[in-house]
Amino acid sequence: MNVDKARVEYHRVENTQTQSSPHTFSHAKGAAASTTKADVPAISNISITSAVAGLPRSHLKQPIGGEEEAGLDYPSTTQRVETLSFDIKGISAPVANLFRRLITTEVPTLAFDRILIFDNDGVVLDELLSHRIGLVPVAGPVHKLEYIDQQNPGSFSQLDPHRVLLFELEAEGAKDVPVTPVYSNKLVWKPLPGQEEWANPAVDDDKVFLVHPDIILTKLGPGQKLKLQAVAVKGLGIVHTKWSPVSSCYYEMKTSIELTDKITKESATKLQSICPKGVFSVDRNGAATVTAVEKCSLCRECLRKDAYPEFAEKIKIEKDKTSFRFYLESTGQLHAAQVFRQALQLFAERCTELSKLVQRTDVNDFTQNR
Image 1 (cartoon, rainbow, N blue to C red):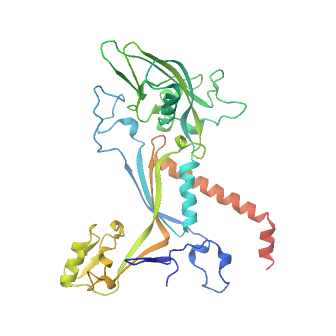
Image 2: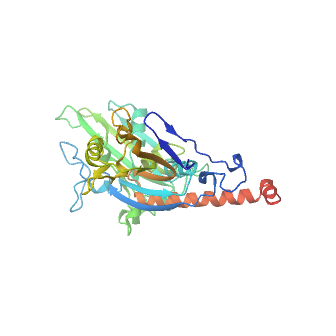
Image 3: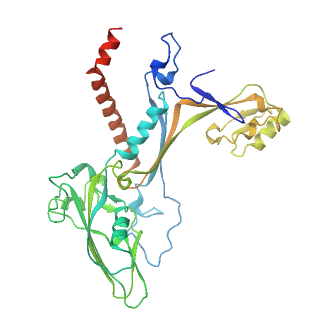
């Protein structure tokens, strides 16, 4: 049995364990699975698509979100909401999960973290309103800003233009309507000294804007007022998910399907018809072939020996424990490609740090003297 493959049967999956500790194996050549050996990752088939193009517009009474660029069927502020997928092979599942965690928790973004409320006559309490504003994705030149610290806490009395972005919101309920909704587009950026150039940046990465200007924050009655200031700071998703650059990030082991014997004529046609995902097709010679393995959902219908004895034992489905398909969807603060590149840089830095640490330990001396 191939130790790097998990065999999928109808009632069970065999060889599911993922070994990541080489010392659990003997020193004989070939005794260890490749998942315990040095990872040599290879990335391919990178694809980036818009995650919002084609979605129906929100049915609002008035336009929310400002201008739209020509040719787009969605608000221009959501151009960074993208889905990126790629293949990576030559790594073990623990390393793949490490990369996933880097993407979700250690790529810095901007998020609202300080709210100063002057007036709030609306139905949403101050604490809940602050929480809602904190989850509004805000984009800006995160690479040009520094983290707040104890010496520079980002307080409203001492706003550092190198560390924070200041937004203001002022709204009043219309007197001729019973309810006035307040959307996130009411949060207006107020450049601090030295930030004026970001209002008309030379590059898109420096642009300051709210990704979703149509998020409802509260509702005001006739004559009710809302006035506040909000400060966006640089942070990491490991501290709070509002700083995570992705709304989802996951991976799956790649599937391989092999026909161990020919399936022809009526059996091939039946195999094609029972697969709900269209994985199989019939060629011009009447033989079944695997044409869309990436669509397989592991429903295992084709492996039912009681229902399809003529071909169930001729189909071999496996999961490769060293080859993965990654998916991530950016929240819009950063382009998906930016998230991907920064995660790769962080991954390389972690590996370098670990290598230096190992070289300084007694364990390294022990292995060299064996």
